[in-house]
Image (cartoon, rainbow, N blue to C red; front, side, top):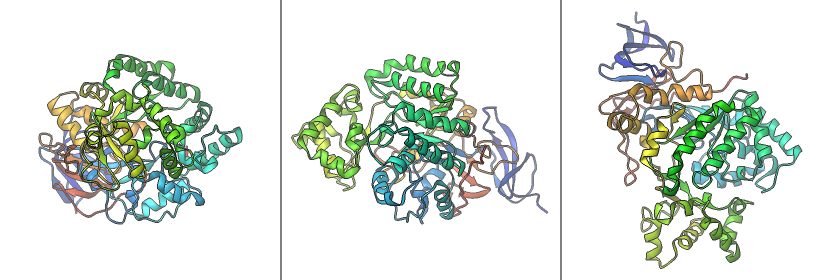
Length: 526
């Protein structure tokens, strides 16, 4: 009688610790790694001779919150690049917690980032949202961060005002309950509403709740250009004042004029542990990012929701204030220049504009580039998504090599995806391991497995160790690569041979099997 349900035979085993590989078999029983050894026997086996066997890749910054609920599998691009677990609830934005009266406005608020699949919003709490994810039988495992914006909106709405003491008290209670319902941290969206309306005192109090549960606070820098160093210090200070572990999402320097600040950024990151702050980060391995153009508007532009923002765009006086904000050196538009932006996607799908850079599109319309962008933003009901080529490949190299930095994909899955949605993890293995030798293979595997598991306390994931959940990625070391490009972002990766989630094979020989064994990982109360 066979000892195991499935055996991965004769693989090159990378365990996620950063140690060098061993050769051997992996025995799987009842959805868990049951043994590592030689000559193991199973009811079924997969020949992995010459292939790397790794813990399943963990995406610490994902936006599949709603697409994971879709009836049809919507996350194929992730499992086909080896991802077996995603962290949802990013950027301070998400579907839970939720007041009954806010369902329509929340859907409108989130559709640009999370998509708007035809699913019924049956949940109100984090617990019932996680139940809904489980019922959807996702392709891969999911974990959740409590979005600060969802907590704030549940207490005081989308109002641009400081939270009163009693508001903060209620927010702390709601955050604590939400964390205790199974979430793995809290995310802050410091550049978008309603998180951008919060003052430091509110953020410190809520970060303190995360610290009391021993979970991280996840936030993008408030500014990645003119205010880069001040924004980095802001998050380090937040960690000092609250005692929370701080995780910087999408670490980068935006705008060529700010690239020389890399030494100061590296010094600030290195100083954080000496200041008593546990500081980690994630990065996507591309020098161009995708964003909603509306996120470049000043915080006050978003007060009252999307319809109020559209009304302001139609008002000449308010629009002049928008221009003033966007032309200020502190804005991303000014830091990068209009030539860095291209039209990535539009709700209307206009083929005459999608893929064009804003400068040439504006020239064809005989308009100033900023006026053209604001007109298009209004016409597309705030749905204008742009690609911004604002980063340095050399700086991506340096930041990716930092030992506390994980790899992420972090692309919205709906609409026209950034190529990282199909290729971020294989790109690291091809470009940064094989071609550029920025990382050794064992270092790269750690950044995609054990490091994010450690960062978020995901103790059932990230390592090829007996007893862990059998989330495993098998890839061909000399052939794995990304094929998605900015011109053709929907191409699947190559060289990902087999992917297991909970011991079930979701990708076999590079093809989707139809299995949907994913589940929600719930944090146990500490």
